[in-house]
Image (cartoon, rainbow, N blue to C red):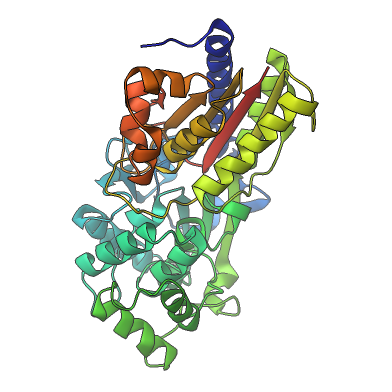
Amino acid sequence: MISSTKPLLKMREDAEKIFHAGLAAVDPEAAIKKHCRIDKNNLIIGNNSFDLAMFENIFVTGAGKAGAPMASALEDILGDKITEGLINVKYGHLCKTSKIKLIEAGHPIPDQNGRHGADRIMEINRRASSNDLVICLISGGGSALLPLPGDGLTLKDKQDTIQTLLDCGAPIHEVNAIRKHISMIKGGRLSEAAFPASVMTMMLSDVVGDDLDVIASGPTVPDPSTFQDCLHIIKKYELFERLPSSVTALIKAGTEGKIKETPKKDSPVFTKTGNIIIGSNMDAIQAAEKKAVEIGYNTLVLSSMIQGETQDVACVHTAVAKEIRKTGMPLSPPACILSGGETTVTIKGDGKGGRNQEFALVAAIDIADESNILVLSGGTDGTDGPTDAAGGYADTDTLKRALALNIDPVQFLNNNYSYHFLEKTGDLLITGPTNTNVMDLRIMLVL
């Protein structure tokens, strides 16, 4: 196999340092302890103060890939003041807790463990009274990890629906609009169950724009979307024949007023609910920017809100890198371009990969005729699609390595086989579970 040149090897090391600096900035334990503390007998969460003497019980519920370290940090702060707690987390995303129980469950496709945990979480919230405080811990992956099907639906209906939505390339805002309306826990219904208890939610954001109602499908947030919106999404992607008939029937019934809408912002259940974001994609990008400058790169942040088809977004990024090489614009080498957000892949083949690996494969093809450009695209949760990779690298020697192995990058791309391509060329980004999740971080280095 052809190895990368020394400059490219050094750039790969730099990109990895920059990526891990971004991860460190959104560490869940540090985020909880930054935004949550006890002052005398008051619990301070962001700008909210709770007199602990006013509450008979403190319950902790929630879901997400970062749920375990968030729970551990909250236990460090509150200790025995916690009455009971339960959080659904992804398989393998555990840490030691005492008062707050953790249930491992399926992600991105929900499973029976998640259903069992969601049932118990709702039961805890329903038990809460006006003299109780419910602290909800939400992070990326919370939607899949809180599966509680609506009336007349089965878990299989939800699984098939989510898989179809993911495969059609719908952005997370549209996916979650439907998730809310086929669920008994999302779209503000967790707060509805806890009312009249006080509810305070701390979130790690994994959605573009940090919209509270989209993070984990907003279990404690008023839902601006409607059944009519869901029907429009189904029509937009021509999903009537692909979704379970029970799901389309439920949504049609909702548009006819036969099923209660999700609670909206004027609902009284939100008079005792607060929500704050304790970590976001921009936090990771800004920390990555600081590290890149420290290493010696001229650095530019494009955006934390990039979405769209992965292949198109990748080509725009590599166009910026090639412009830097040719004209020194928008900044001169050594340059570091940073971006975040979350792209989508419309599945056309039957291969294995994820949006970040596909980004890297497209970039590798597009920069093959250049020199000294390196791209890292990674999911901050350490998992890209249904794989054990966080994402991938691409550099200006990647296609040379592929040609030496007699593999065709275009064929792999057409079959959505980015994982096996990058595995063969030595360009997979493997981090293991990071126990956080604030979407993706993309790093382009140009010498």
